[in-house]
Image (cartoon, rainbow, N blue to C red; front, side):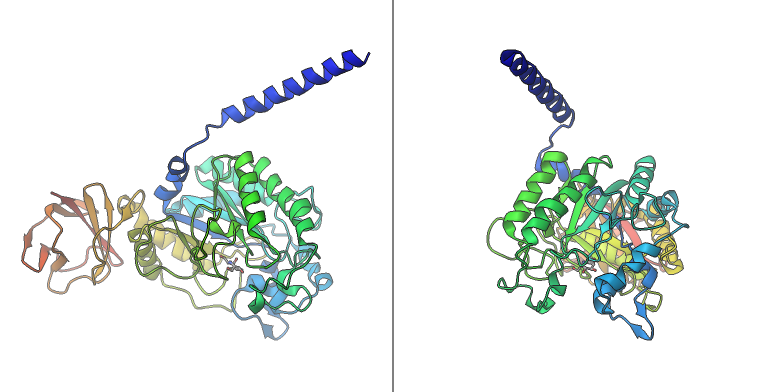
Length: 453
Ligand code: FHN
């Protein structure tokens, strides 16, 4: 009897092992460079900050929160109990995943990163680990992660998710809301919640697991809230390994570990840290950086929806920022903060359209392009693909002569959007002059395509 049940057990374990082995073998484990390839070529993605804070809009009575409205719970002094009413009223009936993805795609974006759970702790998917999610707490009862990931798949956009390590709703992971804890003390290792490891093992890791197991291929896992002292480098490395085990080819940002100081974008601590790319926030480095990085940025001054924030960057500025980033080897993750009904702000839509018009015509100089090997010119930026150099002109020369760096050897030059134009060039001892039309062909950024000798 004992022997028989042992055999059954053995066969069961063998079969299970085999099934797992088969499952694993279906996904080809890529090398680091292969894994990063789609992301490096994509260059432009959409960040979406959406949650219960999108109802609040950064306002409580006469008080308006400074900075990001997604911090409403903290900045407008809501207690956990007070704040719970917002997830309870979250019912964005105008949410249309297909329309969101189409807007991203038409803007020239290749991937979308959705805040599955921001610092407020409210999840936008059907979590079995917690009831504080869109299925159990909200009247909406639609799995937003599911709808958006499916719409992305349908339209050929890579779906990615953001996940906040700090969780103001969870008693074990409140970071700066934890008694006597102040955000400015985030590097003080003496201020930790002793129960945080339990949150990490029993709540956070299983939630990240759900997001990786139930929604198809995930392009990037984008962590945040890593600055709290409770979170350790051991956890970061463990989490990175855990992600790789579930989806071997998923890319993970550097905030999975503790390599950066405070809110810095790039790792600057000595030592080895998990994570595949740096995350400069609201800034573009002065020069190119010799590792993978992605600048994330808002169109106005807030990540979450905030109607009082009218400091919108112009479309031209955003296009120049995209070019600047690509010329330095980075990616641009540009944010949208939909409102509590599920609508993108009109000002954001206008900018997405303008960017789409430009990327449609000039995408050749962006997607798959590499950092410029030449010094940044005064009039704009360069990007490069093999022996094709793209000169992105921000300030059109008044004399009709574009001054290229002297080491550039021009074989042929044209306006990118008009292959018939033949621009003559002459090399002097100080620079290379390209004879361009007197009026800029593109009112925003004109690209001159240069075949190099
Ligand atoms: O605190 C957040 C902020 O709300 C937003 O999500 C940004 C996006 O990168 N990250 C944090 C600050 O670094």
